[in-house]
Amino acid sequence: MDPFYFVFGRSANMVLILIFFFCSVSPSYGYDPLDPKGNITIKWDLLQSNSDTNDVKVSLLNFQLYRHIELPGWKLGWEWLGKEVIWSIQEAEATEQGNCFRFKGGQLPYCCEKKPLIVDLLPRAPYKIQTSNCCKGGVLSSMIQDPTKYAAVFQMNIGAGGVVDSDFDMPQNFSLGVPGYTCAKPVQVAPSKYSSDGGRRWTQALGTWNVMCIYSQYQASTSPKCSSTYNDSIVHCPKCSCSCQGLSGSKCVKFGETPSLLQQVKDSNQEPPSIVRCTRHMCPIRPLALKITVNNLNILKNYSGWNLVALHPNLKSLTQVFSFNYHPLNQYGHINDSGMFWGVEYYNDMLLQEGEVGNVQSEMLLHKDEGIFSFREGWVFPKRILFNGDECVMPPPDDYPRLPKNTARAASFTLSIIFSSLFMLLIIFAC
Image (cartoon, rainbow, N blue to C red; front, side):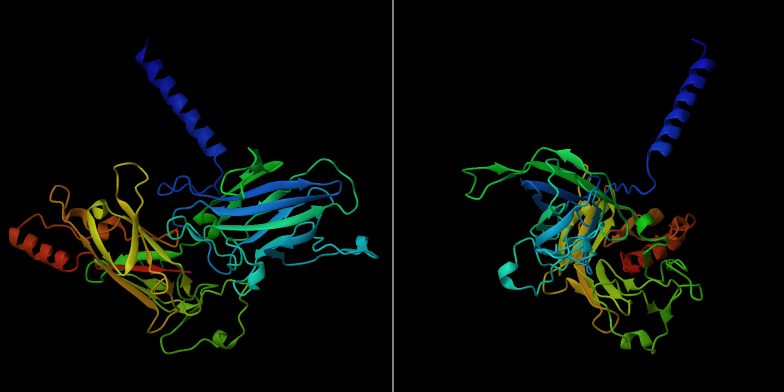
């Protein structure tokens, strides 16, 4: 075979593969190599079908290792294909009743919206209506942080209002109401099975559909949400990491000043506006490690159930962590170079807004493996940092300290500086 035609043919095939890949993969799809199977699944179970109504059970399941849904919580939406309405609902509520004019003179449905929006009940809901997967204000924990609180469930009685229809039409166009998440079309799967007596007898749904929702940081925000740097004696935080002072829509408050917005009434159902202290990076938080300190510079927002993910080759040699929880993210077998840190419940799992108490701290011990340990090319610093699932902007590689090549004395001096500041990590996060 002519080598020219062989090479040309291989190159043409590669070009076609790349064209197919970039044309077929949606830019909103957020693949995460640290959590390749992570998603939030909406499970829709048809439990009972009558002549004019249906009983359904809806479950939200957070199958993500470290991303969670924090306040103000999820707001599940969809679009009915026909004239369906919600006659009753348990363990959740619709935000609007909608126009129920066509039912005048009789019992009004609970919700007549073509595109209903469902929210979770608050923790202060009456105790008699609370269940294990209800009433968390829309908060969903990640699988690692708290596997007992990763789900939310509610039930509805739905129908078309006196119209007899033996077919069930699955609604479409689902959304979670949380920035960054995109939901696929419903897919019918094997019916869910239930047992109320410890597994002696099982019943099953008449039909089950799954809707998979994927997170993309680029869909969530047009600008980075956090920036990472280290002790300023080693490398500076990138300027304008999250925004720049003076830009349209960029709000910051100088130290010593109090924004007038603090005196206004806040809507607990809405995300608080982003107002930070004026800095060169315009991002509001800081953590330091081998001592890790996370300082919140966000003036209006607390971070509940926060977490920090770090990628570093020596995390496999981590021996002890103080004051934080830790779990390795060894998704690729023996390769254990990433891990997740989060606060201890009722102790430091809430990162309060900017101020004297707006910080959490920890220390960790790492075994130095002489086979891989090095001071060269910034090896001692994490390669990736994520706060609450959003990746931080890292300093450029050329900004990391390097070993001098000339004299042993200079090398020794640089080593002592780096070692004394080892892992004095400074990370800035935006809300």
